[in-house]
Length: 241
Ligand code: ADP
Image (cartoon, rainbow, N blue to C red; front, side, top):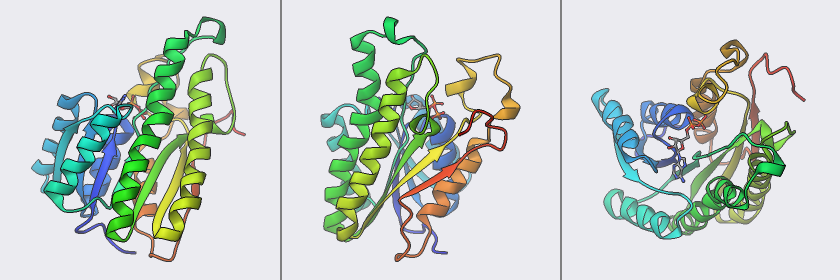
C-alpha cells in the first residue's frame, strides 16, 4: 500500500464531521491537507489541530457552489503547493421538509451545493490533475443515493445525481490516469444527523473515522487498482436495502 507522503489533498466541507475526520486521516497518512469550508473558522481550527499534532495542513474559505471561488481556491493551492493530487468532494447540506413545502429556492440551493459543487470542483481539478499526469477524485455519496425516505427529496435527488456524476467522471477521467471513486456512506455520528434528529439512537450510526479510513484506503491503492464505487454502512442500518 502506498502512503500519501508528498501528496496534496483538498477536502471540501473539511471543517467538521466527516470532512474533519477525512482531513485528519489523510494527514496521518502523510498528505498535505487543505481543509476547504464555507465556514472558514472551522476549516482553520481543523488545520491548526492537524499541525499541532505534527501534520501538514492549511485552510481555505470556499463555497463549492461558486465557480469563481472554486477556481481561485484550486489556483492558490497549485501556486502554493505545486500540485493537487486528491480532491474529496464532501461538502453537503440538507433540509427536512416535505416535497409540497420545499421551495424552489431551497431545492436549487441543495442541488447547488451537493451536486453542482462537485461538478464545478471536479471540472477544474481534473484539468489540473490531467496536466500533472494523474490524480484522484473521491465523491462522498450517501445511501440516500440508493433508496429514499420522506422529507428529503432534494437531498436524494442530489445524491442520486452525484453517484451518476461520479461514474460519468470515472469514465472520462480514467483514460487520462485520473481516478474517480464514489464512497457511498451510511448514517454517521456527525452534526449533520445528530443536530437535526436528537432522538436518533447514536448506536445505529457509524463513526465518521471509519468512513474516513475507507477514503484513505481507496486513495492508497496501487496505481493499477481502480475502485469506482465502494459502500460503507453501519451494521445496524436497519432500513437497508
Ligand atoms: P457530514 O455528516 O457530511 O460531516 P456536516 O454537516 O457535519 O455533515 O458537515 C458538512 C460540512 O460542509 C460543514 O463543515 C459545512 O460548513 C460544510 N459546507 C456546507 N455547505 C458548504 C459549501 N457550500 N461549500 C463548502 N463547504 C460547505
